[in-house]
Image (cartoon, rainbow, N blue to C red):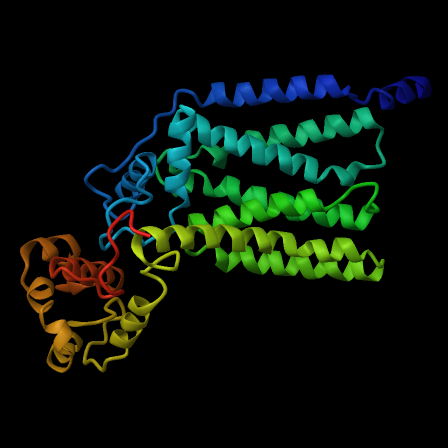
Length: 364
């Protein structure tokens, strides 16, 4: 019996490098095969602020016109997803297949990022554990859930977040367990920067949780690296933020070139955001929390601000605007709806409330 137990303990899976990559390829093919029956969907005619906006921008990018003609929607959201759609079109990759491959790539990076946790195991066993972790991540049910089938940015956002977290984790583990010569950390910081930049450019709210995590991870690594006098590795901590700054700068430069607007969005930043903040501070008799600028507040604004008087018809009487944005139960505009309604009303009046008239497309 003791001999049998000792033999069983010795039956630990071990993989050669070639076998590892062969199994990884097979797992990836199996993942794609398992979900090949899924169908993408888009709310055509029902989501002008979401699916249609991104699809329209992707078509414009494919045509070499950046995000297309400037209107009240063009710079209203972060537009990395439109770039992703245009890239898939350029590569002739089906939409869902492209998203699945992106998730697999992020999962493989995450599996390698955690490899230092079993650094004391023999090489073959370490590869087997890495492969097992990859398989678990690849077949994570949330990676092919229904929300990933929509032609919208939620399809790729989890993969971008995983890419960022994997990069930071890989850098942190190598900073703790290895020397610079044994395992450099800059490639992991670069991967984290790509995930951080793409995630930040994919959703307006991504920075609310990605940046705090990045800062906390950076501070933890700095404590370890400075204590060990690894000055170059400590200096390399700037890489993720440099990549983020470069990504934001590229988008801002493109917006400046095509529309005369330096910024990612004219909705959540700049003069429009300041104007909306001022409107929400107008005194009102309404105690409904869902109304940011109720009807009585708008009446005061029309009376006091001549520039808003021309919008009164559109916001209060135009049938199409009422149908699209007004809440029939409240008989008024909910907070989020009012933001879009006033932007469209301003476009109907041939100007935007956010900026001076934009430059024609193609003009530098």
